[in-house]
Image (tube, rainbow, N blue to C red; front, side, top):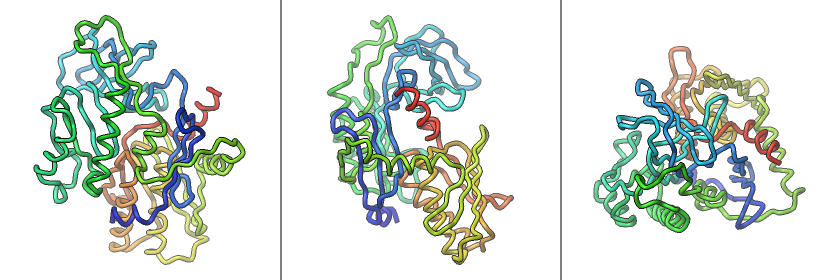
Amino acid sequence: MGKYLRNKFSKEILTDDEFSPSKVAILENGSLVEYLCLLGPEVPQLGSIHIARVHQVFRQHRLATAEIENGLKISVRLSNEKIKSGDLIFVTISTEPWGSKPARAALGAQIAGKYVILFPGKPDISRMSNRSIVNNTPSISVMEEFKKLIPKDYGLILRRRAIFEEKRLIENEIDTLLEDFQKNADYPQKLELMTDPKKIFSGLSLIKTACIISPEAKIRIIQNTSDWQFINAQLDTACDPKFTTRKNVVIWFQSTKALTAIDIDSAASKMSPLELSLHVSEAIMSQVRLRQISGIVVIDMPRLSKIEREKFQESCREYALCDIRHPDIYGVGPAGLLEMTVRHRCMPLSERIKTTSSVN
C-alpha cells in the first residue's frame, strides 16, 4: 500500500528562493501537507549539531539541561551515559520548543533523514529501527549493502519507513545527507580540546529538508507574494479547530497540554460508514501532519462495525507512512476511541506561524 500511496499523489515543493529560501510548502494533489519556514535565533534548527555545556543531570528522568553556543537552554535525552555538570558534549537538536518546554536534543552527532539515521564516529551502530515491523525487516545482507555507501567510521539505522521504499530513494537520501554534512560541518577532531560551546553543523537547508520529506516532488520557485495567498489560506484553515473536508464532513481538533482529541461530525454527509471511515482517515492524518499535532491523539469516530474499525485503523496506518514523524497507531481502546501517539518534532503549526510573524 505504500507504493499505492506514493503513486496516488502528485507532489510539488514551492519555495520563495532556490538557494536561500525563507519558506517552503509541500503539496500533494494541490493540497498543502507540510509547511517549513525559517524561525528566529531563539529556536535552534532541527538537525543542527552542537557542542553543548551540561548544566544539570537528572538521572532518574534520563534527562540533562545544557547550553548551546548562543546561550539557549536545551534539554538532552540520556540513557546510561556518565556525564556531569560542566561537561562539553555533542548533541543534535531533535525537537523544536513546544509550549513551555525548551528544544530537546539527542546525545551525540546524528544526521537524520526520512529513511536513515547516520552516526559519525559510531561504526558499531548498525540496525533497523526498534519500531520496525518484524515481518518486513530486510535481511542482514541488505543492511550491509547500505553500509557500503557510508564511511567506515559511520553508524547506520534504517528507519521504519525504509521498509516500504525503493532502494534508490534510500541511496539518494544517504548521498544527500553525507554530502551536506561533509561539506558544511566544522567537526572537531578531539572534543577534549574544546573549551566553549560551539555549533558544528547548521542542519539541512529548508529546500533540502523538503526534498528529504518528499523526495520525488517537483520544485517550483514562487517569488511573488500574492502567489502565496492560496498557501496562506490553507495555513489559516489548518490553524482553525474546525476543518471541513471536500465531502462536507466536519472534523474538530481540540488540543490540550495532555492530548489532542479529534471528533468527527458526519451529519452533513450521506456516505456509508465504510466510505466515511476511508475518507476521514486521509483527512485526519493529513491534518495531523500539517498541523504538527504531537503527543497523545484520540479519535472519536461514529459507530463502526468491527470490520469497519479495522479498515479505518489500517487506512490511518497507511497514510501515517507519509509523515516523517512515524505516528504509532495502537487501535481502538475500551472507550471506543482510536488511540495513537506522534513524537514531538516541530512546534505546532499555529505556534510556528506566530513565531514567524514576530520575527518578520
